[in-house]
Image (tube, rainbow, N blue to C red; front, side, top):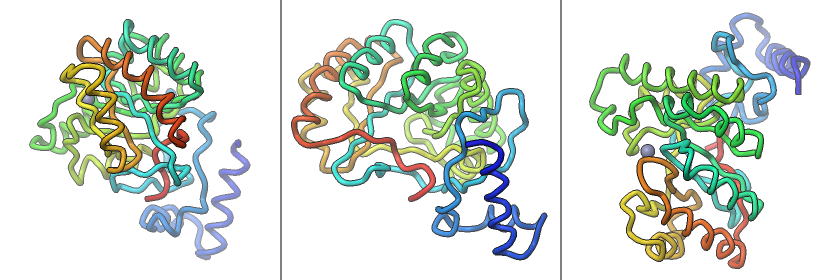
Length: 261
Ligand SMILES: [Zn+2]
């Protein structure tokens, strides 16, 4: 998709509303049902070095949990990296299983490991902003602080990725606020939650991580793992078991919804 489609969207909306320059203001206020037909922003356009601009679709401010594919599809989400030891191993396992995931990256780690960020993008995974400092109390702090945490990390991840779009925002520890959700959504990043916390961060043992997925998948499709923040050997071993198990049990793999609830 290129600029032509972007322009076409404007034309369609403009004719529908009967206005020109005021249209984007109206579009920004539309609910996601109204805007759902406006499609997804072309990822290939990139935004490196360009100011943030209004995108041709509305990203809801609500926290996403559902899978784009619906049905029995699940979303694999992996937080706190990229890590030079663990992330490449997880990418190998994902590739062997033909699975795409969302990587919620901490800005400075992305900046330190642009090669891994580029591999994540090249292999078809999606990027998620997980802030600069991973401050799990950021929901108690000023809007200006939250804004800086979110936007500085977005820039670091985009720069490391060579301009690929950051499509989600996940607050560290789930410390979302209405302001942070609004800021992220306005910048094209859907707030992203989870349904199954594998607790892999606490290193409970590979079997425990695997069993948590099996036992709690009825909660919903979005599963939380970690590739940073410590020794993630158990997570690597668990992924090696969990991905084939999910497939054997009739699950497919998707991404979290982005432009719909
Ligand atoms: Zn985290």
